[in-house]
Length: 109
Image 1: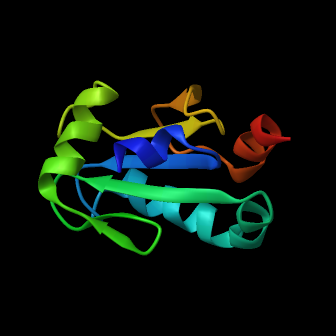
Image 2: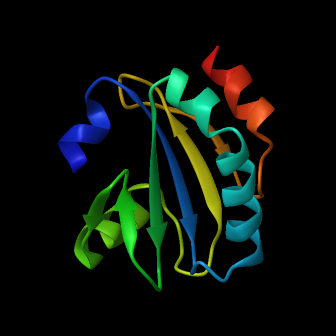
C-alpha cells in the first residue's frame, strides 16, 4: 500500500477512531453526497480506523497497514483527520474536523 500512496492519482485519507465517531459519520455523509465529483477527479478514498475495518477503495487494509499510516501521518488512535494527497504522494491539505466537499474539490481543481 505504501507504494500506491506515492504513485499517480489523488488520495483522500480519512482517519477516525471508529465508524461511530460523529466526525467520521459527518465526513462520510459529505463525501457520499459528492461521490460523482470525486470519481470524476479520480480521487481514491482511504479510510483508516483505529477500531473497525480500514480500507483503500474496495481493498481491505490490515491492522499493521492502518497503524503504519497513522504513524506516517502522526495520527493518534482517537484523532480524526482528513488528509489530501496529490498525484505525487505529497500532502496537499490536512483538516482536523469534517470538511465540506467544496473545500476539498477546490484544492483539486
